[in-house]
Structures are given as C-alpha cells and as structure tokens.
Image (tube, rainbow, N blue to C red):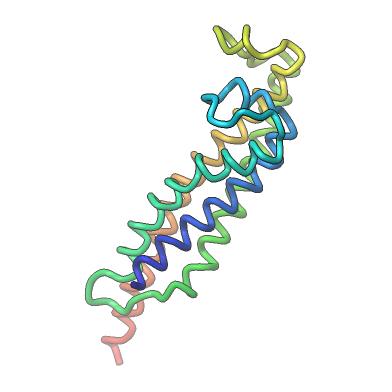
Length: 174
C-alpha cells in the first residue's frame, strides 16, 4: 500500500503541475493546444484545454516518476522512506520545473521575436502568422518542463535511494 500511495501522489502532483502549467500556456497561445495537439477536446476555451491537457499530458509522467521512486524509497533492506519524506523533494522538483519552463518560454519568445527560431512546415501554415511567437514560447516552455522533469526525476530517485543507504550505514556504526 505504501508504494501505491507514492505512485498515486506522484500522479497527483504531476497532474496539478500540468493543469497549472497549461492554464498559463493556454492563455499565451491557445493554438498550441487547438492546432499543435490532436483534437481531443472540441473547444478553444483556454481553461478547459488547460485542465484537459494538463491531465492527459502529465498523469503518465507522474506514473513514470512514481514507480521507480516507490522502489527507491521502499525496496531492499535499508530503512524505508515514508511518503511524507518525499513531499519536499517532489515539491522542489516541481519548483525547478516551473522556473525552467518560465525561463525557456521567455527564451523561446525572445528568439522567435528576433527570427532566430521559427515555425516551419505544415504547422507554420496551420498556425496564424501572428501566433508563431507565442506558439514557440509555449513549445519551449513545455519541452523545458518535460526535460527538467525527466532529469530532475532521475536526480530525486537517486537522491532518495542514496539517502536510504546513508541511513543504513549510519545505523550500522552505532
């Protein structure tokens, strides 16, 4: 049951992050969701798109973090890490992801507004020209969130595993 609680908590945290992230990016460029994603929702309402895509695009990320994190926190002979002790590292990961997403989104906007990067191909034709810059800002913000979450998730999992080993070593010295 402890492992299920960890996995479900990671899924919940990822969904909450995804919804908040998408509430912002859907308002920056609704076309990122209506044109840049498959037509899952028949709406162009940024609130509904942010909620819907916030869930669809992140629950599985939480699952992919939660399973190995539960193993790192509970498996083996070392003292287990309770769910409560994982809230801070997960929260820090989400905070770092937020900062990276904001930074990347601003970078994407800056680069696109100076024609250093641009949309190309069919997506460039489908997205109205005046929406290319915000679309690229959203794209960069989303990619930064996924990339930072992936790398940061590995760091959190490794940190949790190592912390259990240090506790076990500390206990054996006494």
